[in-house]
Structures are given as C-alpha cells and as structure tokens.
Image (cartoon, rainbow, N blue to C red; front, side, top):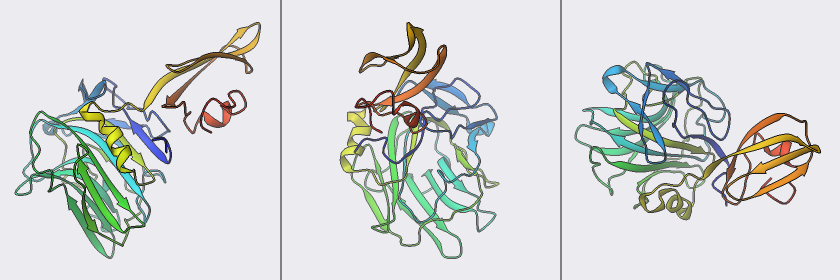
Length: 289
C-alpha cells in the first residue's frame, strides 16, 4: 500500500519563516511568534525556541480531529533541551476545558524522560503509552517518533527509530472537539513548548504496517516519500501538458495554455488528492487514482 493511502497531511517544514505548507493537502500551518529554520533530517526543519513561546497551528477540521478511528502520527524530532515537564511535538487539546482533549505526542520529562503518546476521551478518562523500550533520548540527536491509535485492536502504540513497539490497551477512542491542532505546543495555558527542531510531520487515517514504518525510517536517513514535481500546461502546437518528474517526462495534448500547476508525486507516481481528479483524464495508466 502506498504511503499516500489515507494520508491526511505532510508538513515538511522546509520554510525559513511564516506559514508552513501542507505538501499533500490543504492543512497549512500558521506561524506564531516566529518559528525559525535549521537544517533538518530531510531538507530543512522548523526550529522552536521554548523561551520565545513559538509554535505552529491550524484550526480544527475533520482531517486532524480525534474520534474513535485509526490515526497515525510520525515526526522527526531533535531536542535542544529537555523540559522538566513536557515538550510537545503535536497536540490537539486544552487541559483547562474537559471537552477539548484529544491527543498529544510529546517528550515527557521529569522522572519519565521518554517520548509518549497520550489520548483523551472527555467524560471517561485518558491513557498514555511511553516509548519505554527505546528509553531516554539524547539531546542534539534526530529521532523518528511514530505513534498511533488502533481503533480495531483498541490500543495506543509508539515506537522510536523503527524499534520495538510499546502498546497499551484503550477502547474509548479520543475526543473530537473544536480545539486547534498545534505543532510545538498545545492550546492549554501551560503550552508545553518544544525546544529544538521538528521535521517532516505526517498524519494518516490508518495504521501503518511494520514495513511502512521501516520505510519511513530508512536506516536513519528518512524517507521523503512526497517528491515535488511541476506540471506545466503550455502551448506547444495545440494545448499540451508537459510533465516532468524524477520518474517520467512526457507530453499530452490537453488543457488551457499558460497555466502552471504544482503537484506532489509519490513513489510509483501517485498524485495528491487535490490534483488527482483533474489529471485522471490526461494521464490514464500513469499514476494511482
């Protein structure tokens, strides 16, 4: 199964400043208090400085909400310092309001010193699973943290660097509220800011296979499974689509002249869900539809 199947968002976080684009869908992130840039695991990364209260955010929407469904989160992370409480990777919750608690992927400080996923169901309670098998992360080191809620197996799970999976039973799903989704913090007044770099954050509405987790880690090199490509509609005789990518260079007569389309192409050539309907007629047999 391609890694683009049931993919909800990919934030590569390559930008130097300002808004950060969703490279797969339309879940673009707002910059708060000037998140900066540093070299990342795959290209560049977002640099979060805890003392400056920096984070990225997006309003609630169906893609990013919890509920009782399969959800997987993956992110490359790099700690500049460890908080005595929590450094948030990605979260959608506000502790001050009991009905706005959904999930948080984080570094848990204090006596725990581990990466951890917590999920919350208002009126019922919460559960957490720590990457205890992996153990304590080091500073100034890149880690791939993958965590997921399995609605069929009724578990929450986490692994680091494609290592052993730690699992906890949980059959209550997650909340589904209007609280915004944040990277580098949560919406609670305590905020629990990240301090360090975060790169290539992904969300799926499914559970990844062990092979897919291995592919994402790629021996520690990471996997940029979305490869930028440009689709250029240009007048060459009749209106012609001229398509260039790492995989293929071709022309096809169609489309309006002079319009530039940007699309993302994945391994095996799979167009994003935004462009897929537009391209279906033009590229039959080339990409996943």
